[in-house]
Length: 188
Image (tube, rainbow, N blue to C red; front, side):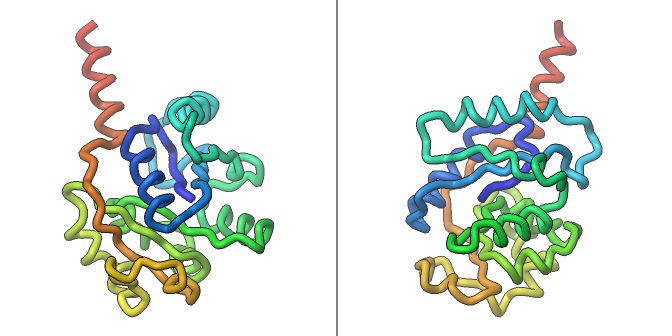
């Protein structure tokens, strides 16, 4: 699962999803589009626009856009994951995220509950990796870290479990895309 605002979704989201499918031998990745990220103050594109953009980008890929947070009225990942783990009891899930999210993960509501209930797979992001490794979450769960050379499904059976993937770094972010759009609007 890859959760987020997806404002807008981009090739970085697609890349880590496809890498996760390959590395973890997954059947599919779910994109969980949040109606409103509680840590982001700025007003995103409408929820409907973001969902449609995700569906357009993921067409022809084994990626399913899910509207679970809207369905259950949640804007907190731990509530969403709790729902998913209770509703889909026979499926092994992985929480996918970029290294930038690991830096501030300790600010998420009940972040330790997420670590304790689902395996987490971190993908490197240009400019964030060193700080991610020094983050509060990384330090707290250092004993549960699976080394990149040991990324096999059996090593994720015990929780907590997490890893950082040695992936090719994509230098793109939704924030950069939004900022470029604003600059273009200002020139017109």
